[in-house]
Length: 183
Image (cartoon, rainbow, N blue to C red; front, side):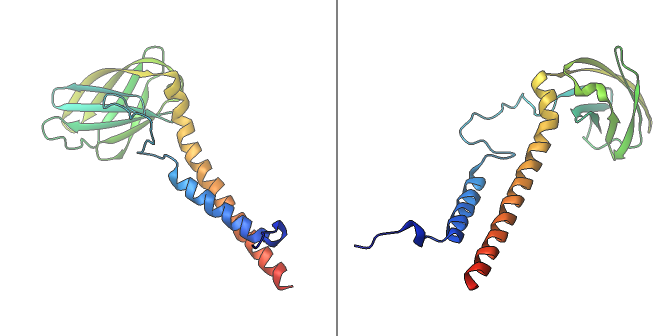
C-alpha cells in the first residue's frame, strides 16, 4: 500500500486546488437578482426608495439613489417618455433643486439631503412640451435603505477586485513555482 507523504504534494498543486475551490465557491454565492435560500422580496417592496405621482396626462416616478433623485416622466395614456421638461423639486425645509434631462423622459437631480433616512414630502413642478403640472408625493427613506444605497455598489466592486487579486496571485504563484521547478 502506497503512502502519501506531505512533502510529495507540491505547493503549486495546493495553490491551484485552492484557487479552483475558491472559483467554485464564488460561483455559488448569491448575487443581484438571485436568492439562495432566503425568501424573496415581495412585489410591494423595492430596493431603492421611490415615490409615485400622477395628475392629468402625466405620471412621475421618483427613485432616490446615491444622493440623487432620478425622475421618470411618462404620458399616462400610452406610457411613452415625456422629454424636454423643466422640473423643479421642493421639499419642506430643503432648498429647491432643478432636474436635468439625461434621456427622453429621464431626469436627474442632485440632492445630498436624500442620503439620510427620513420622510420627504416632495413637490414637483413640471413645465414645457405642452404641460404645466404640479405633482406631490411622499418619499420615505428607511435607515437600512439609506445605508444600502451606498454599500451595494461598493460591495459588488469589492468582490470583483478581490477575485481579480486572487486570480492574479494564483497566476504569479504558478509561474514562480514552474520557474523554480525548472531550475
